[in-house]
Image (cartoon, rainbow, N blue to C red; front, top):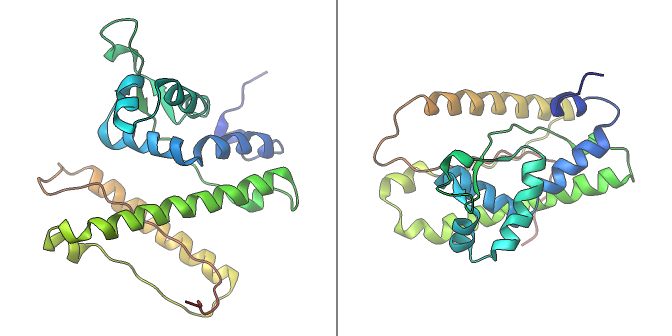
Length: 203
């Protein structure tokens, strides 16, 4: 029997169990942090990640295991100087999912809802981090960074259309930037796109 790829499994009936494992692996604050450190700073050993984060070596290994099982990080044995070193690098796996992939009141829906909440919290912490560091940024970066906020009446179909359009623009921009040689003043830039029904927000 042909083995199904992860991408294929997420499109058919066993979506729940497979996708639950992916969401649990990724949407954990510490695992997300470790994965982004590997993405931004490059391959590292378990000991190096422990020193960088202040986590115990055993804790780093514990968090890397589910990320490895789901294909988010992979071993990099070619970087080891001896058999005692365990090197890891990030794997740029793409992931797209929705809580609607799961039946209402199911375990999968609860996990998906929690994953969305953890994702929002991670984005909120990233935003707070920038706001704290903004005073030390150059004028060019302060002018370049920003946010856009709009409140308009729309249907679910219109909102989905906006999401798809903005996603296409972001993907095209990302590929364009990746092909250019990084300039001396380049930095990692986080782009967050969100759209959802909203009432007036009480302070």
